[in-house]
Image (cartoon, rainbow, N blue to C red):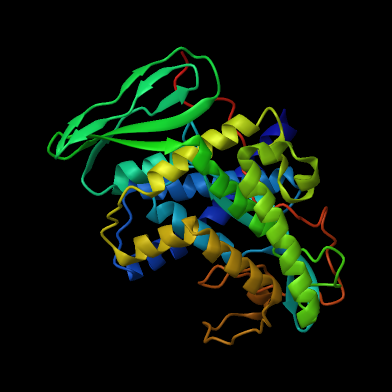
Length: 377
């Protein structure tokens, strides 16, 4: 019993130390951008730290590990605070996962573990509720199935006849409808169609084809102009095949190498498609963040192109250590693992030690799957 109490105390002490390290930095950076953290934002940061700690613990990674890239953790915590995303909410609004990335340090390729954040479908709903322009209330969304009776809304000038839906619970989900009450009492209906999800699938495959050379060249960075032309032609063939097949491309075995299991697995496929339909609806509804910093944070978290470019820069850019003026500290303190104000770890990675990743990731989009979404009829 005493050992269990000691272990729990050590865990709480370690987590508290991490929180005390990151939390003041987040509060200071938000304050520097003119944002005063409210109680809920503080709770979101604390829950995010706890969730990240759980992910690292499962992987056997310690916060003090030299192979853990801490540069992006501060940005993740800033995002959860600015957008008010609660990692402890149920259903989840945000999730965290680790990924192996290759970075250059002192001219050497070094494998690092990096924490990544993803916004769940309910996270987008929370963002819409908090920042939707003129949004008074976001109602429970409808999951319209192929066997249901559904009539689209009809418009006569600015007058609208609401849609009609008679659920049967039969068939696959073919559309998602969000009834939203605007300020002033007007109810509007935003609809996302299943067939539009093929655009998300194409974007997912393009991400996974980014570094693919099909054996034509050693890497896309060493490919000649002729080889690049051949590689691009093969990529276009794959994208064209998906455009022709639509979501049926998920059953095409020749595309298995470019589509993540979360898309293809029979148990998770439907949840993934529903999540993409929901995201497609919520993202197109205008937002008013009231602050440029919050808007920029949202764009960075949601923009797949930005994320892809940032990943490429992290992997291939020449990185150098920048010297900043630091407060004087004694020799004993310098030996301890510490963090700079931007969240980076001052402890340097051993040049001779190259952490070997568990598996070099090929699939970029690997969102966790929830067991059930929407109302059940």
